Length: 58
Image (tube, rainbow, N blue to C red; front, side):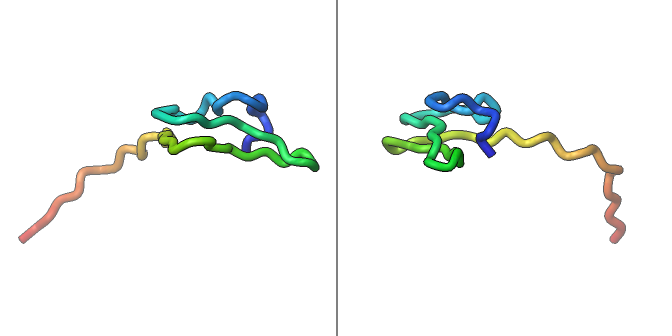
């Protein structure tokens, strides 16, 4: 969902690596991420919640 991102910019919540990407807006107001060359980015995810250590019994 790119509704909060500025058209023409790369979304701040993603991590840019290489290439040329920008948020574009279609007729009707729908937004998308457009890559105009081969591009790479990372989607940062929250770290998983810590869980109790698992014990394996043999």
